[in-house]
Image (cartoon, rainbow, N blue to C red; front, side):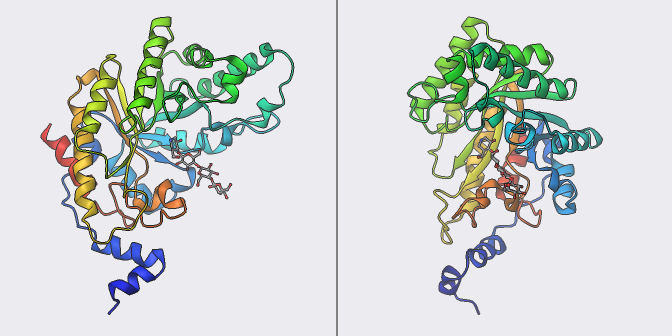
Length: 348
Ligand code: G3I
């Protein structure tokens, strides 16, 4: 008999197995993509497409795909300025063949720059031209397939004190954001153009700056046509905070994308005592209801940042081995997060 102490002393995998084996089984309510009145998305890596365990759940429950990283600058732009769309094209082909929408992330992100830009010397005009060409090349490639793009990702400083520093701002000024949306509109006029951010539900100062940024962009006529709230949540988020943040975001009348939902355990601690499933389910229900409460025209989609707990980026972080942040467990079985979402959609 393996004692709990042995479990705690054992490898994280043992504790994880205990978590998952003791995870409350959840009732099957139906396919998320059929129950919800809007698309249900997940992120995907090209290597997952051939994994039967991943594919079965993805095809049953999801109707929209976001390449988790293979459509980002780190994957498509080589240091010499040439492009490699191999993985992104594979994901786009799978989206087409499986009847799923393709969602692009991200064209411009503080966290990613390429040596191809670093080596552009000389006047700002050359940098501006390369910036425009990159956006045109990447978003233009999926014109007619990508339903939307995170045109600019995570522009606001975490403390809410203005915009983040980044190569784009250093070379083009704060207008790099306006430019990105203008270039994206030229490259693919039909795709929704999203400003995507995280921690808006938990950092009021950051959210205030984000809302001011959106207001300014819209006043200047920047073609922003939707807002994304990533929703990488922590079970400790106070009840009602998510719904309140969604109301603030929706005040502009734009479509809203819950773009990267997962619900962490709270600092990655392994809590074998509390019923993490019930806490996650409560928060998942609040997220679903917040989106459901919007006018239909503003309910763009709800994307979970992964299919199974074992697919989560949180598991790939040190200390994250026991995270169970998604709707399905490693074996593809529904969890309380799934049931909470499914029941909220079914009741809508
Ligand atoms: O799969 C390759 C592997 O073959 C290679 O050996 C290894 C080392 O180079 O890299 C692996 O790819 C990594 C990939 O994650 C899969 O693990 C990439 O280097 C790594 O950059 C990539 O990180 C992604 C990250 O964004 C940066 O693009 C994460 O998967 C992805 O979950 C994360 O997603 C972000 C959103 O875009 C924005 N919001 C936050 C969210 C989480 O950080």
